Image 1 (cartoon, rainbow, N blue to C red):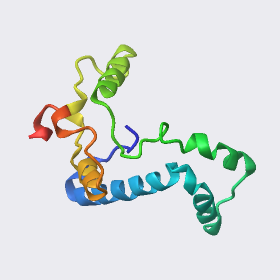
Image 2: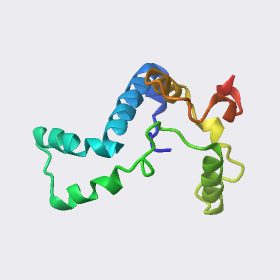
Image 3: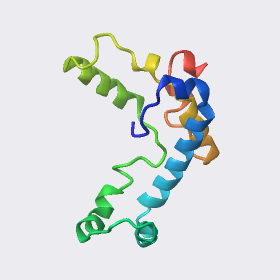
Length: 132
C-alpha cells in the first residue's frame, strides 16, 4: 500500500477529506507514471521552482514507473497478508494481527470510484466489517 495512513482524528472528523486527498494523489500519480507526460511533469515542476537536476531527470522513468507506484492506490490482499506475516515474523507486529481490523478502505474506494478506477482491492476481496 502506497497511499499512507491517517490519524484517527482526521478519519473521524473528515473522512471526505481523506477521499478527496486520495483522489487528487491518484490523479497526479496517473499523470506522472504515464511516461509520455515526462516533459510536461518536469516543466510543471520547473514552473513551481523545483530544481531539476540531471540525476533527477534521468531517474524519472524508474521512479515513476507504473510498476513502482500503483496508479490506483490499491494492492493485492495476498501481498498485504504476506507483508503483515513478515512483520509478525520480524516481531514488529504482534502475532495474530489481522490488518483488516486496522484498515479502512472506504476513502480509497471513494477516490477510485470518483476517478472511474475499478476498486482495488475489490470489496469481495476484503472480508470483515468494512466490506459489509
